Image 1 (cartoon, rainbow, N blue to C red):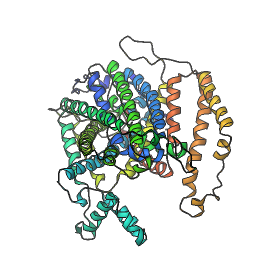
Image 2: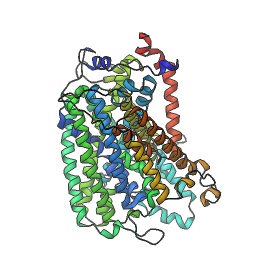
Image 3: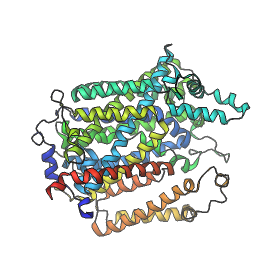
Image 4: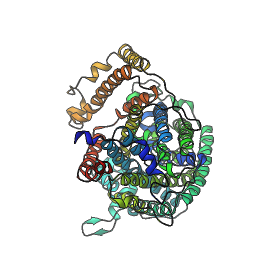
Length: 589
């Protein structure tokens, strides 16, 4: 059994299955490089820039720009690896299909299971954020939805418990925050069915139903809708940057930290890394382009270009947005702010820009919902072709030529959890799953043989890392030892008795130990990769992709890892009792 868990699919068989002849009714090939680039931008610029960016700026200060650059570099290396796979395996399935050809079936299942978090569960956060901006827009035109129909049950409950825990003198200050007041009102004034308070986010549910219907109808209609929204939202984002630049105060880029000195990173580099979930969430989606391989006119040429162009454009946009936000207002003003782009114009009393940003955010996040809702059904379709999921998942609608059952199920997977979860949970859950998938994609490139260059297709440059990569790791270790002499000794120090939070029992041992354990695992992985590079002469680009994504994973908390590992365990149970026995590879042995 151990060997069969890692059985791989030959690239030739994957290409045959993904061709129009391979499964009778093929998907429509209508997308060119412009469409793919726009789909990438539609997926990337959305909830990350319009919502989670505020929390990231609060945690990292102006220095969050550094994290955007780091994530952009990590995604660039990863995009090269996705492009390499896409040029060889231009079929639907994204990282799942690539893992099947490199690591084997078990890892392919794990990636497919992780991608459910990226596309489906990630879309829950986007739906919540869309609802926030939509209700904000309605308020500006004097249309009001009851508070208990425009927020999540969990958010309202948490706010009520926090309010109840406050001292009476602090409760008045607590409700001065408009968001807190609205959530308290939702909890106190909601209708009750038995002992259950009826609180749910109605706009989030409605937009999920509408997007699912649009994706069900067809790829061509979705393409035209997405392209129109991308053009509009890029124009408005550009206006935000231009108008916001007029109000920038350079002193806000070097605020005074707790030590009383001016600093670009007022909370230190640790504060910057604490924002990794929010920042990386802003980048997830560029890989969704690879899911559209079977609907691309020339996937082996256009998919890599679409991913690369969209990633470069969005990285520049994010850096400029972060600089504008932290330059216009002090970074601490972004605490608990869900609409940071509107916030800066609220502070500066620019009413027309507040309204424009609200409209733009609704448009931007609608396009993100569209792209993510298109991605998940096609991954399920690929898994079903391989026998890892029931045949119904690969059913193609006779009229619309779309994966009909998978599309409806995706809408349900997004819609139902909206009733009982909240934004903060799905944000961290999605980011860690996506980083994990990126690590496996970059590692997968190391395992497939190099190919001859083919004109008209993407060819990832081969840079022999035999000596370069070990020297880079050695240089990093040396720099840290010299310039941060306490770095490695502190990494192995698990005595938290002197920590005030730990002694007060407000922070558990694992909360404090998780970053140290993550760092130890990261450096062990770097040393192992260095030794493998020496022996196997690996290519530098995928090695750097693995390393940078692993480093970003060190910013994840204990709860992130606990939920993620629990999710993987559930997926493994399903694979062992269904996928392993029903796999096509199992039937051909």
